[in-house]
Length: 287
Image (tube, rainbow, N blue to C red; front, side, top):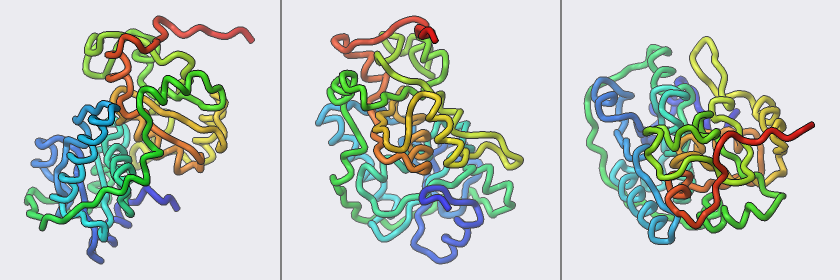
């Protein structure tokens, strides 16, 4: 059983026993139309753009510690994040999970299959908005090892033992678009030099119940196509750390030992002209 992913039935059991805070990461309109009973809406988990400067990381931690405290998380509860489905929200529920791990929160889960899995199981939904009792959310900086900044990513380019893994969509990888927000949203198009590429969708597969993560063995097989094993340190990036969070969950679930994320990702890297990029279509190495 996954340490991170839970099913709709498992979530229902957790809810009945108490000590569970559910966080809906979808946009406010989707939340208002119907959500899991008791769920708190926190769409900023997806929309927040972070920088990897010390000031930017401190602001990120403060913002979400306050938001999660307001949702009722004190450290005693299990936080459960969900989005619409695993491939329709750019990994936003997994971004919530990643933020929780970064803040050092002891217990966090992702609803596998998202809201669609919940409704497919004929579970109750509501339009009622809860009023959670605010709690004090404490930050534990011991988990800082799962986030790297631009300078650490730059240093990794000189270290062949580290796999820099780009998980963006193909049009971003080949330099035709700078972001999911529009081709010219960022000032530069391309990729971090030397990066390997596995499009984030490849961590999932269609099932009769909707998109789900592949098994650990299947995820390791995907990683093997770019030379990544369980022992390979992996530095992830995408545009803003959402799709990379989806991959973070997949890689950790598959047993890859060292996974960290460059959370500023392409949104930050492309805006720092002193940082190198590769432009155009990737070169195909001769066999």
